[in-house]
Image 1 (cartoon, rainbow, N blue to C red):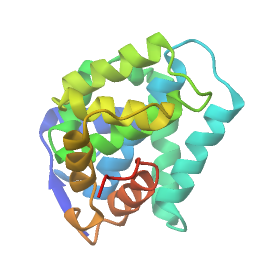
Image 2 (spheres, rainbow, N blue to C red):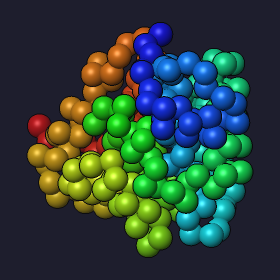
Image 3 (cartoon, helix red, strand yellow):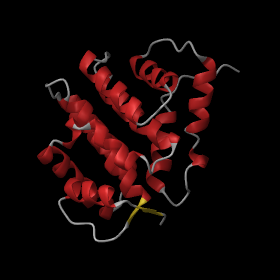
Length: 200
């Protein structure tokens, strides 16, 4: 299992998110990615002040797809869900780069993809949700054209930038992610299913 060395600030934030003190100076990459994914999805869920059943169902669907039968990850995800809600960490997107600094561009795109899917579940992305995800994209230093591709994907609107779409496909190629890290590989496979087809 691949581990990521963490700064004291990152360890403190993860401890708050999980409700238990991280004594070690590293974390499994899959745990880190999962924690950031939950952060972005919960933020998108809560930002407009209304929570719909289909949004909570979507959150659970994504987690089920990523975690599958891994009981340790399920337990970790429950702790993160509780910690982020309890401390309203999702209201502090400026803190996300503390953990996001350890993620690849592809992993950051996956976070935004989950957020866009969550916000577009009712066929439209509300202004507050769009602003929240735009803020996340800015803090994570994700190319805006990539963010626009993900937005269009989950709104079902026309993708006008074929070059950016091809780059997103490339960045989300599951073979780009560390093969032992099943969570990000599963996430890439999952989100790629939704991307519009590339022109041949």
